[in-house]
Length: 343
Image (cartoon, rainbow, N blue to C red; front, top):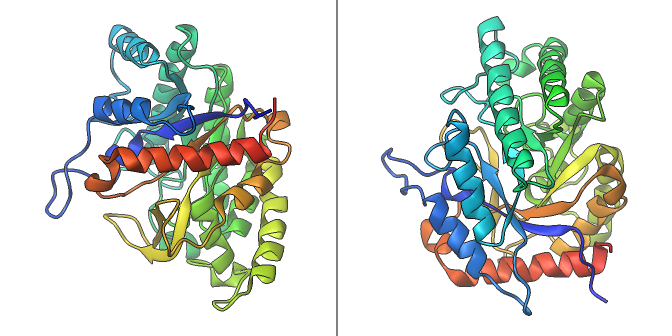
């Protein structure tokens, strides 16, 4: 019998991240269109169970009133979808600012977390949201400032995260720090682990693993001293290193993004050498998605994981707007659940 858990979610933020009105950018894809594409996807008679949302305009303004947010939640429920994890708008230029900035910047960061918690509680209370976390990062683009004083930088981020975790706990929420190589103090597996241990609030603040981004952890991009693989690794070396990395981070992992990566590193906007997502079937993809997901899903139910989410940030609009994209994504998600899920 096929597994019925974890639930399968699609991320809505690929319609916004890397999109905009600046020269060279494609326009954002509205939330309604992303929801319609998600609802239309089908593989083997199965559908997506829900969506993870980005609390950022033009999709969702986290400062919206309760009435508007309830209407949004109801519209998602009418499509037969649940709401899962939420991305808090913690970065400079949004509601927030750097978690390792001055007092004013850190206050903005915490205010953004507080706003995200308000939205999460409202979705919870109206029955539209039954699982998930609130995703954060250090909101410090690039690693150069952090590298000038790593110890102080990590301690300052941890102090901000601890206060954010207290806000989340008071709202009945959990925070997950995203592991991606462009965020200062979170840009390598070792630095990410150091930060989680420095915060030391595992019941409230954990780790969000993304298959694409954690692959780059192994290669040591932005932190060569923590590389676990050379450029010409073989399959045996890869899985040995992968096991070692996941064993360290898995106890903290409370949110999982299924994704593919082709090994490319690039810059986009303010991001400094971040990873590139690609389609599950991309011939240049470096990951056996189903096998790699199994390492993170070991014991996931006991850590409170109830759904997994596909992440395909910065895909071209032509790819995002194709039904074939979402059918293929759903197909690999089902394979992950069938082989490594639970009932």
